[in-house]
Length: 140
Image 1: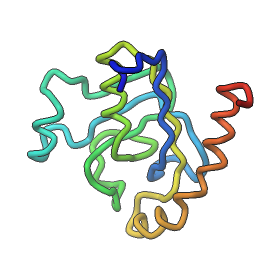
Image 2: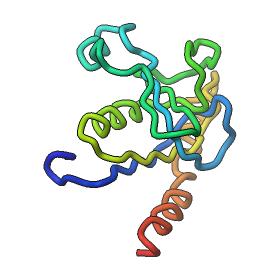
Image 3: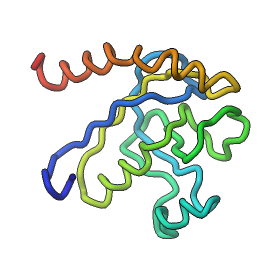
């Protein structure tokens, strides 16, 4: 999509499990791939030359992996939130020299009740996403 449409910036709005952040919308600036080399699926998608951390400045860190985190104590790297896609998008943007803006709505606390909390709260981020979008576009 980046090659086809050649955007200057890719915007990601999504949900995340809160590790050090409570509910609400938070901008992420750093992205960690927590599954790198840990499962067969990631071996094909994450190259040894890929950076462990992709950074767009000072700010919150999002840990991305292929699993739904239910125990924050299992994380090896420090993170403010966890998700399942931001690192991959950040990597694509980095490789294509495109700016990346990422906003995560904390829908659960990445604990044993995360799956139920996520389902219950997933839609609550919508008004926050719309507010940021309106700020970006000048009220479009």
